[in-house]
Length: 236
Image (cartoon, rainbow, N blue to C red; front, side, top):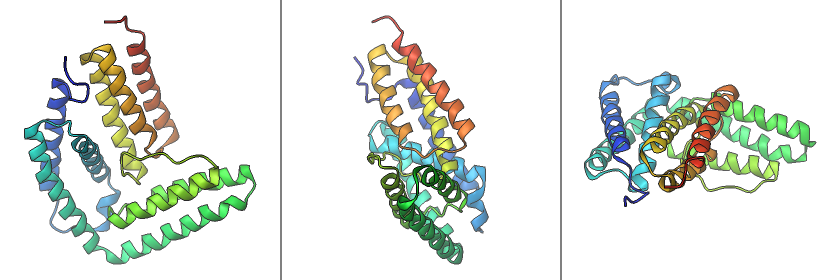
């Protein structure tokens, strides 16, 4: 019996292709990078592919060849992020200052009435997502602080994040990858294996920030339909 943690053959093919496409995308980027590139859908899609593959790499579910290729791509992504940060340090400082102000607003919202507090937190989430994504390690630390401030204000327990995604646009593309994986899980794995992997996909999904409400709802509906279909399968 196959190990449920191992990716099945169709998904291995998908991830191999995804790594190759990510590599090609990196090589096609222009030499002169500006802050505007991080606002494009191409950039968000590229980073989403990277985050998705990096999570699989951490779980050690990529095959050996794909894993070696991804290590090279991971190094290139790191270098790219450093190049982007170096090209617009002024914009970076400005965004950090705005994120710091947003965090302080989230902390201060605990003193508001519940309805107004929830409304403000939703507005702060939107504002956060509209700021340029600098893809710097410091931004991840800021996101964690913002997430903690919001959860404390809402009075619910924090959860472990599997994806270090702060940008809602990137999160949307990661969810598309997860949905694609769920479809292949439904088709290719046994019921018990599929249910286990779908639970892991569901956990990853919940730990991602919400993007557009309507888009997020449509993706979530598709994921639930796949889960129900697997649950209703006869025992094998």
